[in-house]
Amino acid sequence: MRGSMKSLVRPLVGERGFSTISEKIVASVLLERLPVVISKLDPVVYAFQEFSGKGDYQIDYVPAPRITEADKTKDRKSLQRALDRRLYLLLYGNSNGAPSRKPVWHFPEKVYDSEETLRKCAESALESVLGDLSHTYFVGNAPMGHMVIKQTENMPEPYKRFFFKSQVIDTNKFNIQKGEDFVWVTKDELLEYFPEQAEFFKMMIIS
Image (cartoon, rainbow, N blue to C red):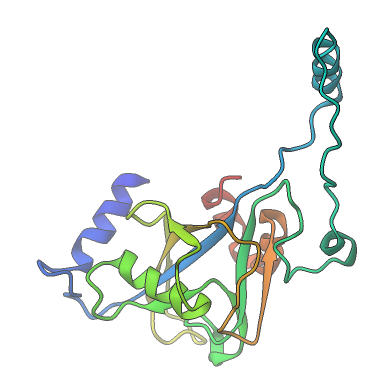
């Protein structure tokens, strides 16, 4: 996988980072909110920990609730939901991969133009959605995956889409400035939005 990725990325930029081919390239961002509470323990593990914790010193505590108001109302616009799962940002609106230019669900994206690197292009894509990147962290410089979109009747211009991972840092709310709508979804929910690419995203997103 890594070898094939390198062979694809290398010819995309010249000595100064500018595109040397006419093929269309799109950088997409998988913005991820990491879990904020630990996953629910197996009953056997929980019982063992309870037994092991009995002794001379014991701390009484009340754990924070796992089910939030956003969970109860099924509010997918909120980051305050599915606290023990990873959440991913999806936008609804115009996308480079939309047949007939109709609004679709997609990740933050930008067509590669004259940026120094593909990661810079991905950063620009995310910044146009969030306004700034002060509460995000890009994981590495290389893309986490790619897909090749072939020419069809509904897609007259073929292109390659490269995915970069970024993570939410120290915030539980963003002012989304792009698209007609947005959602924060778990991996399982995300697959429902992309039924035709479900197998690809199931393999690319490790959670």
